[in-house]
Length: 495
Image (cartoon, rainbow, N blue to C red; front, top):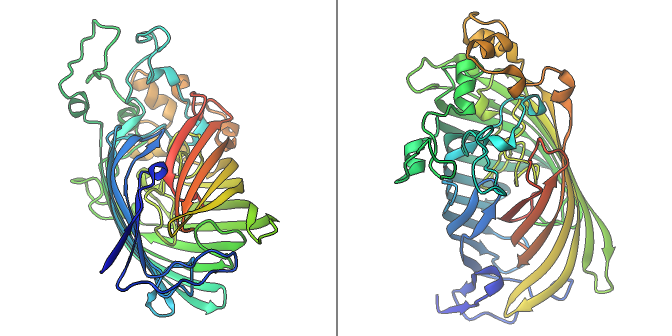
């Protein structure tokens, strides 16, 4: 390559660059008067982000685009995304993703390889509001500057250790015009255990006589361990397992572009069959964890206002979807994985957190099936160029909602996993010396109550495809998060 154009942009902490094999010819402009991007373009950025559930993130990422001769701009010919990062809450991201509609002419191909080690994965119990959440059990009384010894248990009380390995390949072909067929295969590998308290403590030592310390009590039983003792989590799933899967479905797509569309519809319906082997890592693999899930998603983008220059300034966007288990049994750790036809993001956690229901704690809804909705107005406040890079700034007020459609039968789980030693959850909890009412609500209405949040987002985009997103959101019900709000800094739009 003979020439590199280097741009320092402090607002993005980035080094956007454009590289070409030969001196560029004068570029044409699109219908909005913007110069069309051609050739190879890539941004090298520090992977600096913040997520209320994962903490501050540090690392490096790059997204390489090939626009070719620019005829399809803002669509790209090839996209390669690489990221390596780690967060202050001991969560890692190591990912390579490739996407193209041109590598195999007439087909879209997406390949993804991801490793997500997580020393403190969120676990708030089964069935949403049926599991009672206590903020003081894992947070100090900061106003008093010390632990509330009558309530505080451990800052990792609602955590467990989970490493996820994901390898996936997905392909899309055309049935007729905007109607597509989709197929994919891959494997999800889960390695699960109790939190490693010694690792998290490091050089700190727990002293029970102190009422102000950062060390964790190694003798405190965490919620995940209690679920195993009560029989809600079986021996054949408590250590994780490997799950190869096969996926197929259809999509209908009339969007004007994939990243931040201004108009159009995207809908998909698909089935995912997941097998199971090496379940429990030493326990006998259970064929009962072979299962079939059904997903449906509908997204709609409606332009509301276009200025005199033809630039769409306001878009109303919404997404509704559902995921349900229709055959077999899925292990608990797979029920907070939101299936997708194409792997485009790092996280597919559902429901709760910055990747599904913003403002709610990650994995707050854990059940066999659920439905969700995201509604937002997208305001494009300003467009501008720096060098040959096209930028925009936008604001997005939003409202998110999630509900359980297939709850766990908790008594059945206990009866199955204890081989009939206990026939109800209340019996098992009492036998362990715990107070049932401190952990569970018996009413079915609590299971089906909707979880709702609201907030606003700031978007800074480059060349229409590279978008930095900062979202602020708060829950409507404090059982979803006792803090007044959560904050997330991520890449791209939620949908």
